[in-house]
Length: 197
Image (tube, rainbow, N blue to C red; front, side):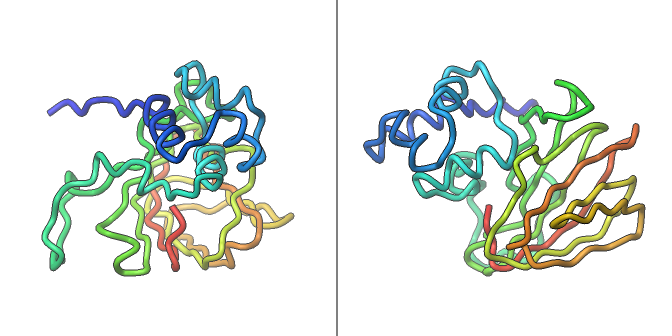
């Protein structure tokens, strides 16, 4: 089954107007350039994960809420989630970095993160994929395991190269960034509490 591409620009415009903000007002609240909002809403630019997260902080809204039209209806008591039941947060996002426009980062969430106060992600980084030049910072702790491939992790001023089987755990209030600097895909399973996306 072919999944329809998520229209990030139209969704952002709809959310912005529903809370009564102009492009300029949202840009000021999120501390981003006014032109960035305009470019994204016109689908002339695809935001990185960190850029979209920063823009949504001006509403405020989580990324899971932003992509809620893709959430599948599940009973509250669901325990097991099949691959096609994960919430696809960012698979349509081209990422910046050495990989060029074909580099993609897929973030797929297990279940209702806010109900359980825990976000679990199945992440796939294509060669060159990057969470963005803007470092991520949020009130959480996060950890994960590199299931396959290699991942460059920056936390504060330190840069680490993680390989298959390596793990990470840190205070997410420290500025951080994830990149695949290899020529092969990288798969990571991560957890974050409390959830921030």
